[in-house]
Image 1 (cartoon, rainbow, N blue to C red):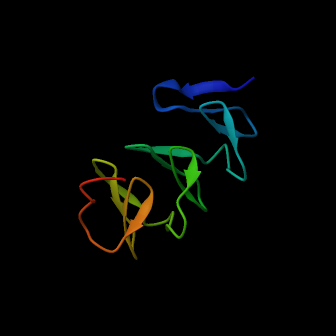
Image 2: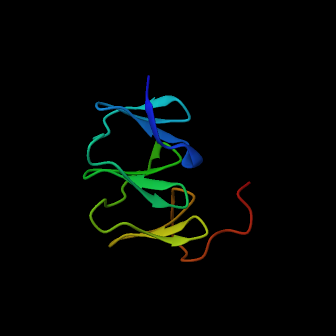
Image 3: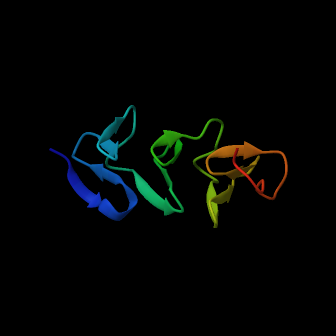
Length: 93
């Protein structure tokens, strides 16, 4: 059973794995995993939004900006999706 370190954020971990809402997140480093806020988290190799890997995001330079927006050295993101525009869309659908 997982040890719930961050139950308010949906993430939990045991000594070997990290989970989001009880679902295993494959390939995550449990010992180096940390929350960033706004649904974002990272380990030394990848960035995650609500338990899903953010494709192409740089873990080294990734920073949340608030309101589910984030930035890394190369791109801007909203709700874990890479944006061409620095401002989030008005609708998600």
